[in-house]
Image (cartoon, rainbow, N blue to C red; front, side, top):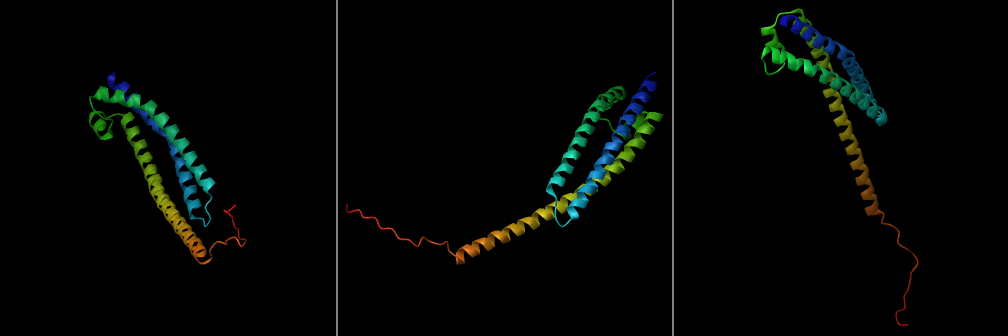
Amino acid sequence: MKANILNLVLQRIAQGYEEQFPHYEAMLKLALEQETELQKEELDIDLLVEIINKRQEIIDLIEEQSANMNQLKEEVCKTLGIERFVLSEIKEKVDSQGIQELDQVVGELSQLLQKIRALDQKNEEMLRQRINETKAKLTAVQNTKKANEAYMPKKTSSEGMFIDFSK
């Protein structure tokens, strides 16, 4: 009986991860959009901010779904007498369809997360590079302005004023 319930709980956790899959795919799509935007000559900052905000909404949704699964994971840990929900430890104690489904889903999700992580690292590097380029341009403009001010002093008033303090 205990094994059947544990199997159902593991299947439910696997199903929960499967439900998150479209959200991770949407994150990958947004990361690709971000990459495309960062490769353009002229950045659309508003579009980048919009992409980042959409990703944050997805992350919040995933975290909400994960919180619901955490209770199930805790129950599995209590039942099996393990401290953390680690698939390799669970596999040592359980051999059921539920753990096989969970292992498969987690593997597929891990591959998708690796793609997202690699793309995010690439995007972060491109963004840092663009920021540094912008800083360099801004510094050049500021230096040019200072040089112009040094060689072309501000006009002084050509009208003279005399104040007579003797009165």
